[in-house]
Image (cartoon, rainbow, N blue to C red; front, side, top):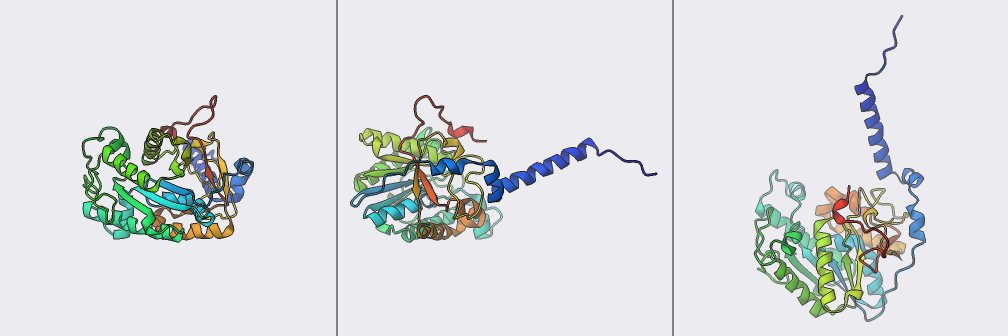
Length: 332
């Protein structure tokens, strides 16, 4: 007679962990499973529409890295251009700090400064191609070329003293066609460049990352934008978006053009407005996303998850009084 053997505690633990991993994978990747547990799509449908762009407006998109302008705002860029507005894009960094990106695209196991600078110049070219897909000509784009992952240091400990980027070894702007070639990696130089762009563009609307965005470059650029626009008495011209909005957001991962873009958990309490996209605008957005081939090789499912029925915009950087604000550093 065969005796029944009770599973060990270790086996039960491993089994439970496996089920949890499978459930998490289904939640992240399968729309049907996600809809069973997430009712945030109803909240998006109830959002008020954002004010439409108008002919003659000058719209400036502040993008921390090449691709952020497309993920957050590709539909809005198209709508502004179609309405007769002029759209301008400024990239604060060249996105030259992602070592794994250089490993795959340049087929080197340990990329050095030369490879990382090559990556930065490659992403500059991708950025201009993506902007052209969205209808923004090169003369209306500005590449500043400050260090990817280093904006917070420039904003704090290296406002006057040049910062040396660990990945590229650069301490000054090196990328091709930068607005100010050779500008030192300092907070002062970065702000001077942004002031130069603001003086030239004279924007009526500025689309900027929200302070709640988890990425340090993103919320640092938000702080700088708020300070510069407030100094001009034009902080009411700022509108805010989020790309890094919390654990695995947006979900489900991958391309789901028939689903809404739901509220980012880290900034769910902002007074969001909905920007509805047409099918044609979604397809053009997807084309612009796919232009970033260095990024989509690794982050394709994350990036294409932004190609949805809508985009999100907040007229305010903080929730209304009485609601708790989410801190950027508190993401899971």
